[in-house]
Length: 334
Image 1 (cartoon, rainbow, N blue to C red):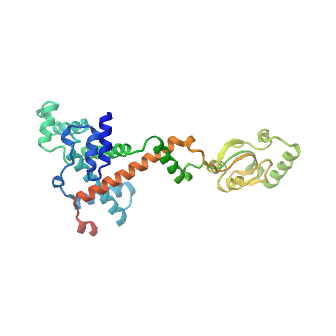
Image 2 (image 1 turned 30 degrees about the horizontal axis):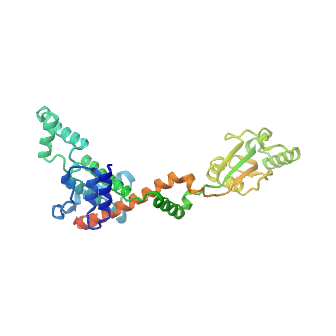
Image 3 (image 1 turned 180 degrees about the vertical axis):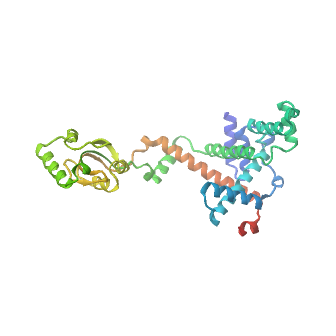
């Protein structure tokens, strides 16, 4: 983006009376005919027909294998209205002009309808536009809605603070979301396994006898595995989180291991596989890293939140600009 364009974008964002689409026009750097927001009179009402509601319901049923609840259906209809608003606004901005996806789609439809009589691509595209083949096409609509969402993302980046102000904003965001960046407690453990199927007469006694032998011989935990039975997942696990331990030993056994004191062999701990004598050699408690260590992650999350907020403001403006009509009788009757 040029310096002049960037300066223009900032000027627009400071003017509350200017519609967000002026900013959009600058961001896309399209022709000067988009340098003013479309007049409200050109915005057609959004109509969510009974047929479209039935399609929405059927799509949900196919994907979820259940009918949407009234609340879910309302949310789906609201989303449909917003997508139609974004689509109409994109058309008013002319974002379909010069778009390769739109051109390809129109030409494809012309070839389907007229075959070789459609002419070359340029002629087929002109004729297709005259016939309105670009309107109410799901692929074209999705393309233009995506453009509008990307426009909002670009616009939110233009409002982003810079330098020291950005550092301060990231520090505040990190402070407000510290729990999201906390590093889970981790343990380094070794264990000796007693396979219950190999000691089906009394595996508990076998495990306790092995425990006494390990303690008397003062066997280093890293060398103790061969004193017991083979365990498929291995004998030593470094920096294992609680979820790692659950995958290895199962819920109940992992819970007991998490509470062990480091530096000694545990009592026999039962798992779905048998019994375990466990040595915890290192414990790292839950910690929050410094901002510098996770700055790139915080910046991505900060920008994603700003984008979401900007898009919400943009959609709120569209709700004020458009009339939305939903065929409520048909909606409520099903």
